Image: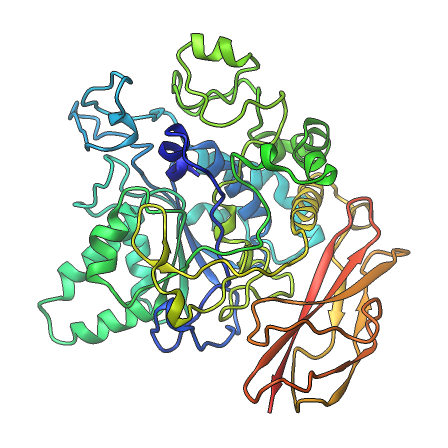
Length: 525
């Protein structure tokens, strides 16, 4: 999560940024107003823009392993203030106030920054996906072909920090998707800067703004585009997108997502979390899983994205004093060799995964965190890193620890890629039953669900819990939280229009337990 780097170096407190539920607004409302939307019939359409950093590469590995759950529309190289390629003509560039402008570093205007000319990390991950694909499709036939994925790879605006003056194959791809007639939203994610996204929007403005009907075109694009920003890493969201495209929806940060940031191993809260970040577990369940698992970056792995990058000490198996003597900046706690580093951008797509929580619908939230609508007295509480959108105060509510199911699901999909027989791997349980009920306050409801597992001989344990994103704030419980068939009495003080979100969680007893959910929404008459 590059956008936090300067803050960490300056000794500021670091907390991972997470995103809550995906909005599909049909009304163009700002997220602070709450969004009234419906779940799409088809898979969510997603475009990824990423800069050249190890956490983007790690996130991309996970993204492709869950590409059964969304329609990949683009995988685009982009720049940020932390990584830019240069134009290859010797042009020197500088923006004051950036990471490279910090006192004592000795940087001067330069032709590129933290960039390896031979870097092709998106293509590398796609190549590894291609090798795993014959096995992956045995476990889930919905995996897109490598040829399809490769056709969506493009280079965007990578020359300089915040450069969006020229059209690129990547910006043209985004532009064409935003202008097409396929219904539903397009979730465009900026894991680096917004330069390529901004260029796509600027191209639309340049082409159509002087033509009749531009207002309709701008309304269509603004309605269609939903941004997931991993910070504003080149300030183009604040400088161009927000002021010139104010109706474009941007996701705020969320609460309750698993820790997948650079700081997460040092912030582990319990022994299970420490194990899942630890070298032994990572080696057994990620690094040993074929070519795609071997690409996953860990501490002390001997790799660097750009040779000599003083902010990338992660590949060295050396002490802190040795690294500092070599000129490297330690901006997060040193970890043992083989330890998890980061998937700093994974929070952007976790809610798009089809795990039954439907996290991208309205303000519901899921693995990627959640956020309640802003109340009038919560306006202007906090600011996004690098941006200026007000966000709600984080509510004091609990969700389960999502790190185990998130990591187990990732590891099992990596195993699918090296396992040619369906029966030799684990697969998610399945839940069949209602997802929406209308009831009166005080009414007792019979809840009946069928929970099965596709793997012979496996048992499934179930549990019920209330998701905190719903409008009814008080505690409430089903009669038997360990049974798929139970009853629930609607609280007597529930008001008309309230929604209660009850989640049925099903976890199998595989070697790496896999979890699926069913979110039941009870609307009070």
